[in-house]
Image 1 (spheres, rainbow, N blue to C red):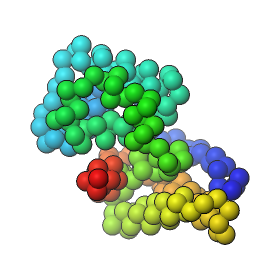
Image 2 (tube, rainbow, N blue to C red):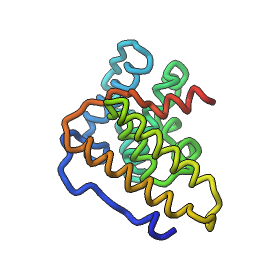
Image 3 (cartoon, one colour):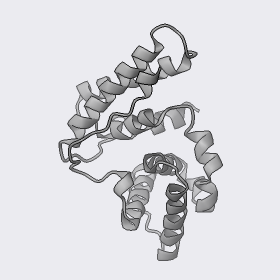
Image 4 (cartoon, helix red, strand yellow):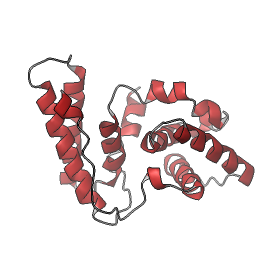
Length: 187
């Protein structure tokens, strides 16, 4: 299994900004965009509300939560914004809640889920679905099951390959594959 957890990173330069490079303004724009996308309504928070969100987000990132998981948590919160907008950002982004809602998958799977939003063609959407499903099935198997490590390693390499193709282009997320929404609707 050691090979399946080896870290492979994209070595080129991204044509768009990733959450680990977000500024405070980028986080605010990300949250506003997520809320608008999911509610289909214009939402413009007051500056003190934006500041509260930025402090809560920065606290999570400084505490060691991967920025992509924080971004995915914001996406998940926007799916039920009507209820979540009434809560304090610190409660919504508490380590316990992030752990509860975004646990059970390794960081590379969460990264692939975040990148899946950029899939543009039917072929890319199918590619992501196929390799994420393979990873999910393998992760559901107990360690030591024959072939589990190889399936995970192959899925990880395939998803990294998709990320590399997407990262080389200047794309905007199309959300043709919106895994956070699919999981939210399934529950």
